[in-house]
Length: 111
Length: 116
Image (cartoon, rainbow over all chains, first blue to last red):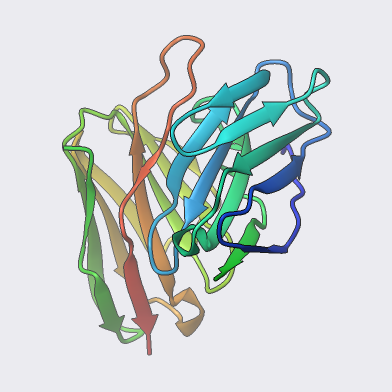
């Protein structure tokens, strides 16, 4: 299975930009990279997905270098409500690899 | 309606009980999933249904029995569970594969299960 590696935790302050990097050295040619956010006692929520270069939506940006062995989720101007666990997943459609959550990054935003 | 609903929210059961978890979506999704999540751990995939057929079973013990009666409903039947099965059980759905496009999963809020 494609293994992803993320920092266990990160701390930030309100208003700052937060960048969370995910390493996925054995990503396959057809794999997509997807990020989810999870609040305590809730199901994960889709944030963003990409294949290469840069993807931006109203919530976040995703940066993927040319070799695609890593990706960076960028959250602009975080607020207290962004305190959550962020998961990076790598794979294609409904296959096992795409449905394997890594250990995630616990982001704590301070006032 | 972009919601996945799960019932019940909380469930306490003894090791000899039989109970069922229910999941429902009305987004027309044809793939549905069960995950198990222990405290401070990532969700772990249990089962995947695609077009009402079981497509992935992650070697889950037979005391967990999934059922997909129709495209909107997913059940998880529980029997003779162990205390270590206590966890948050998450249901999710997604559109089945569209050529070259990966599916966003929509998760329900989960059922918090406690086995005594």
